[in-house]
Amino acid sequence: MNIKLLGMVAALMFGQALSAQSSATGYKATHEGWLVSLDEAFAQSKKTGKPIMANFTGSDWCGWCKRLSKAVFVHDEFKTWAKKNVVLLELDFPRSFSVPDKIRDQNYSLQQSFGVRGYPTIWVFDVDKDKKTNQYSFSALGKTGYTATVKEFTEGVDQMIAKRKK
Image (cartoon, rainbow, N blue to C red; front, side, top):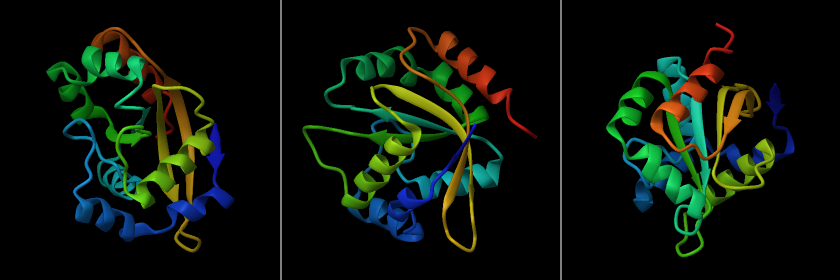
């Protein structure tokens, strides 16, 4: 399933500016090891050959997001699996604090592009970037939501990754 971004890419075309913005403001993901910039995730994905696993979350208000975090993301078993298999990207939609404007715009563009209507939603995808237009295109591998255990979560994502075209 290919998801091509045409008009919505405008919010994602600021390249290095977003990386600099997230670094300059000190804004970080909820969990260590997760990125907040698609540009940084893209660069890491290209360097490592791993797909991106994007967590669309409401970290401060979404009950199921908090449960997923406690059940899966905080465990060493998950962290070890993730280092070997995916690039982690957090796309947060908080209510009690603000994220930098460029990251907020990025997150909303990706939310619309992937049709995310509820949280948590985790998409696994490959991404490419047109060098002439600076636009991203995504090849979705699959999506999931809350799962109760690390094993259940990682096995499901492993099945998605197995679909990749090498």
